[in-house]
Length: 124
Image 1 (cartoon, one colour):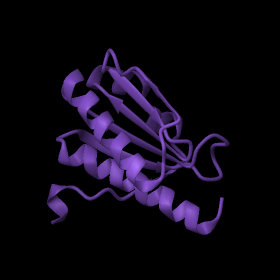
Image 2: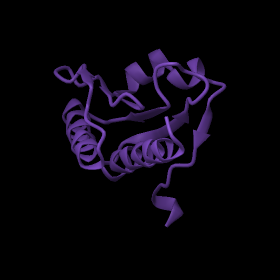
Image 3: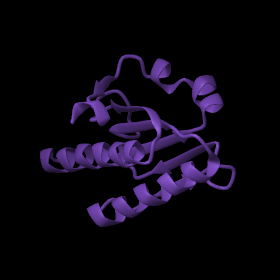
Image 4: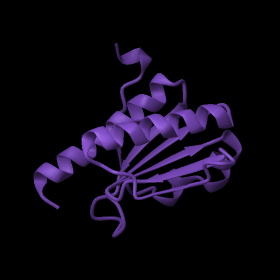
């Protein structure tokens, strides 16, 4: 992966996080997994308030991926809307309800990963 491709993947991950924030998801985290995971470079993790909201955010992030040249490789959990996983290869998005987020605790699993700063409403 070239430096330019890494930069674009980071921008897409932060854009996905921004969509989650704009849609009132909570506890939004972007983990930089470069040199830590052989499968992906970034995880975007967010907690939604309802299965409908989680699916809507998933749809909006998928559209952003299409616009930015990151076609979605896979999607899981969409029908139930409790943990939706969107795989864009270089970026993987996890949209959880609160119960599943606490149970799977991906931040603990990837505790050595760098967390990127995600702009929130208080940063204006």
